[in-house]
Image (cartoon, rainbow over all chains, first blue to last red; front, side):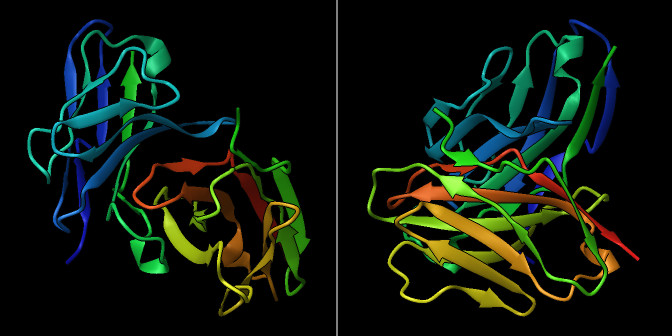
Length: 116
Length: 114
């Protein structure tokens, strides 16, 4: 089954304690991305990656790091989480090339993160 | 500059009526794709419909249709015969060119009234 898997789905952590949210896709997609969703602000992009070892900042990259060492994995790292990073996080992936309905973006189920 | 604008933070519609959710976009790339997604309260993102910039006809998928007005740079989602299960957040998204980044609008929360 084609899917994007992210973990953990739910996490409560304390300020300053480093954490990593993993993301893995099994569709051999080149493009991967992280979004955060906050009430009234919709989906905002944190980082994206066009391929292995290629990453770019999105609209809200501050406080986050990513890496793309393998095609299937794109972890999101919060080196020193703060309460303003409390949010719902989505990982997503897509084929890189081509504009067609089949090249839509696939989302993980979301990770609810609370920083206290 | 914001590339996707959804001017309706919230919308109400009576069950069985049609509703239009607005989306305008900004791009100078002649090749792009427009997508609509639904997010129910459970949180998952569900792909609804796609429109390519070179598509001659408006896209349709069941009760969903996309009113594509290229000159006005608008890609409004029309839901016909609304159902209670249509209550959700709806996001418009765009991908420019080939192999480029996806960007999303802020979303519209639709509430269907019985």
